Length: 339
Image (spheres, rainbow, N blue to C red):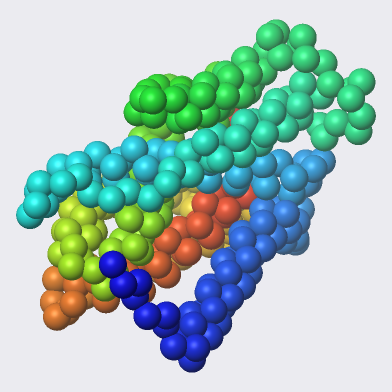
């Protein structure tokens, strides 16, 4: 069999430049996503008169990594299930990219370990190893939840690397439950209601952000291939579910905000408190994400080539990444209402 002729030198150079440009764009986006939690708490608290907790930037960064590490495997499980339900013309299963779940579980484990160390030091950033009271984690509710997240990410990584990666859904669900309970201490008014809202909100966010990221990874090798129709069908199937996820995200987000900022004070707190400012930034980001989603869905339905929706969908997932970083900042800021 005669090997195919090599690509022209000019084309190889264009491909090389395109790859370098994409790598630079990804690095810039990652740097921006890291700067948001590191500098966000100080910027949000400026001029509000509220005190910044020690190490708020580092804690926000760890929570951002934890949220991202949760989104990636949840999105993979979700989209892989959607892909298996697609009827392909030749009956063969869809080609799926290599899983990022083991790497995500490792990052989540390290982030959860860092957050557990903060809890073990009395919610302070430990200066040295002797400041960490590991045994004290078992004596408090926050400590037990932190240990649960550490063990859950460890188990999720083992499941992701096993022959049945779908089993990682159970430890990932444990992380979501632990985060929902952690965000609403027992001293809060109706903590179970708040935890239930956060549970639904976080689950839908992980499915939306992680799912779109994995859809784009599935679509990328399909572009320009004869099976592009199947790729467009997968994006369309995901888009229909994403509408429901966005509705649930909006409803739970509004309810959670009203629990912490009553309607008569919400306008003042959106500009006068760090929590309100960051929440407003998140709302604006979600609005941008929703606009990009509508643009991508219109291209998917009306364009001659449905895969032209790839570009706005890629911008959408980048904006979702920034929204995840802003969510990490929210967790490190003082709640505006003291229960």
